[in-house]
Length: 286
Image 1 (cartoon, helix red, strand yellow):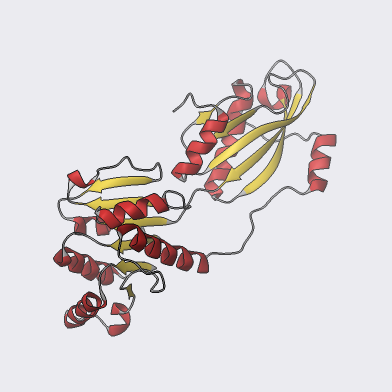
Image 2 (cartoon, rainbow, N blue to C red):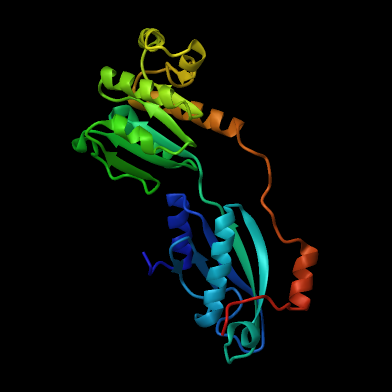
């Protein structure tokens, strides 16, 4: 993984849903270790390729990681006087564009690894989300998982609920109706998720709502479960047809709640100023 070049690293980070920064030398003055257009990629754990090494690269990685902490799409320019800031004897100046691409915060958890789950994974692989598949049956993992998906094995999948993040979107379609009910009961008991979907017929949905009401849940809480899952106008019972319906519902509801706030960027006026008059920045100690 460490030996990926910058273009392959971008593809890897995008597919995995990881945040990353592309660092590009866009202007050079005097003697510099790399020419304009040289690139590297930085994520939270490692860097790929190089734009010169040494203290310059250390400072760039440091700046990139600070941007990643904000987890916001942005583009900024940073001037680096090599002698003054990077303690490099070549003595020139480089201006670096840092383009930050935020990590995906949409997490989808699939309780069950059966035929519909496997079909749904092939769709979610192409969407901006991270997917966790939870099942008690190791032999259900019959296909290579996309890079944005992982499989977690639990003897009792209900045990996975406690570790779920609050921003997870949850789909319940295990091989066992009894387990489905236990999961729904635990998920409603914690009541901290935007979406809980349950596969099944209208009859199953009505039966589950009654059982949950009998277990003491308020009707408003019980109604939070999307069941039957998926969009009713998307017909069909084949696994892929059901998966398309579920994916459409997930995506529609997800984007309804998304902020329209744009990421920050560097204005053209700022770019011209930086290129014409390279400014000193605060860097690490020599």
